Length: 76
Image: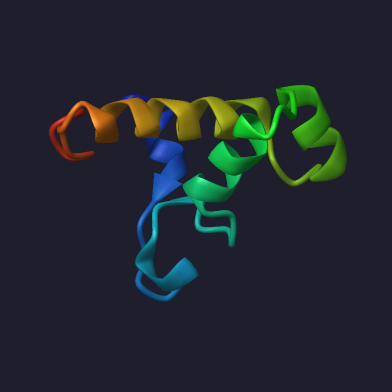
């Protein structure tokens, strides 16, 4: 499995089953919102030190796979 994609978890008990970062309450969509608002990776990590650069890269990788029409399972 892609090491970055291993950071994306889908658990019905966390974030209502939305794709999240490492079973934390950080949905991928929130990471993407921060990036689209113009925050840099460094700013996000500075504001939220529980996140790692690889988490943000994983969110971007997951988004790319999602818009390509592939599923997470197909990407492995």
